[in-house]
Image 1 (cartoon, rainbow, N blue to C red):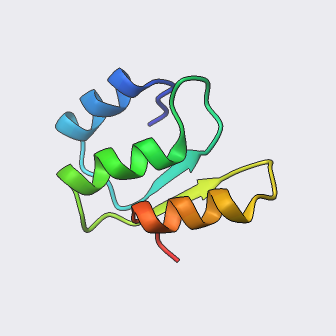
Image 2: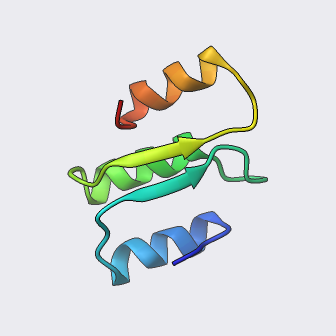
Length: 70
């Protein structure tokens, strides 16, 4: 399943079961860190992988602090 915005992601979390979430960290208006925080509230056991074109240690740290899987 592919979603491109916050509302579709929330709907998917309510309707589907997931083994893994793969998230782009740079969607306009919705990023991987926000997705992780939303996911952790609803499905804390599901691992998350975020992908980013930017090589940013700060982004990686923020994602891990939000609950991304290391």
